[in-house]
Length: 328
Ligand SMILES: [Mn+2]
Image (cartoon, rainbow, N blue to C red):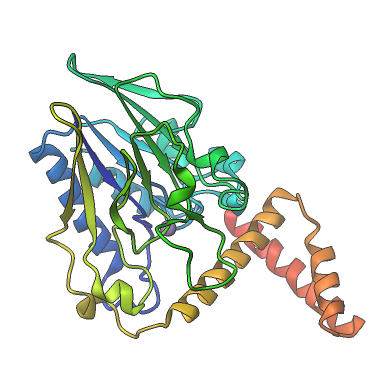
């Protein structure tokens, strides 16, 4: 039984800041290589670790290109939803997203913790489950998200789009889970994305944990410049699992595609700001939070006088209306 795992492809129609190449074309080339590799190695399934898209509402042109590059893939495609795939870290918004659209069209199947998928080639039975990203992930005990409910096969694989790390991060305030916290997992292999640098394959007692890193390098950090994007080939049966990290031949050297170098702290700050922005958009979309109230509270705490806050509210309302108009 063979599976191919890739993660964090961040499909989008534009190039991120710091990328020197035509990013959408690069992602296309990499995905074409992955599809060819899946064919060459005769895999039984391809599994995506989340953040297929860079945002939940990428343009139809981006979705079309992705669908075209995936079309020759004969193996079934499974995925968990990443934080970038949904609005406001909320999996309930999935039906309104482009990932939800692909699922609706039957191009891929979304993995859930309580709905295991089984593969059986007559020799070995493999169980596949997945945990999509949600706001409390990495903020509550690991067992709730990183451990599948049970194991009803010879080999169990659990895929999580979460910040799983070998050691605690150097940057303070980053919600995360350390591999050791999964000591009691029934999964023989835990696969994660989300942490773009990846950590390769790690042992956890008799179990394995792996993150090959993001298929694309989004941020111009020194670490991202130094690494070569890869996918993970998994072979189960006949003498234990064999895991092989396969670097992509279409991936250029870091210096060729990434311009400036951001420090880890800068990159983290940028990411936080980005997430905050997404959260606000989602708040407006879901109407779960009173955005005006947040603005008033934060504005008052920061010492802005009422006329400034009123003007800010007026401009926000104007922008929201404009966005709503564009969305239609
Ligand atoms: Mn990601």
